[in-house]
Image 1: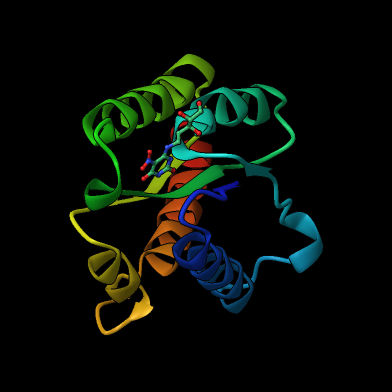
Image 2: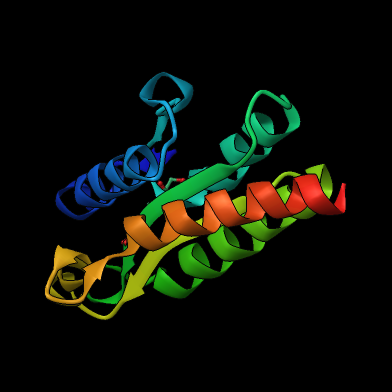
Length: 137
Ligand code: INI
């Protein structure tokens, strides 16, 4: 799941995530892609997807950039809190793939730029957590 706010960043996160999942053996058809307007909306849909039991894990992708908003802290904190709650309430891993940076350049560095792609990390975490939850049952 990805949020369209700061789309030039979040589309790259999405591309990196899907590519990493497929590279690690996940069938492309098994990956559902859903978008929401902004990071604040991620928790509600994450919880809904997790509660549906249709998925082994949910990955929430977004970019909250301080330079462009006065309510950065509110959006970033509520997003993180809600995503954590979605996982705890449902028992399904919900991965926090949300960049929180001071500038757009810092976000792009982490969305396929010189510091890698956080979408790749999110995919790795989702697979590890899905497998772990099966083991701990
Ligand atoms: N949403 C983001 O995903 N990133 C941001 O940086 C951001 N800023 O800057 O405000 C942002 N705001 C929108 C927010 O997520 C909600 O979509 C909006 O408040 C409507 O609920």
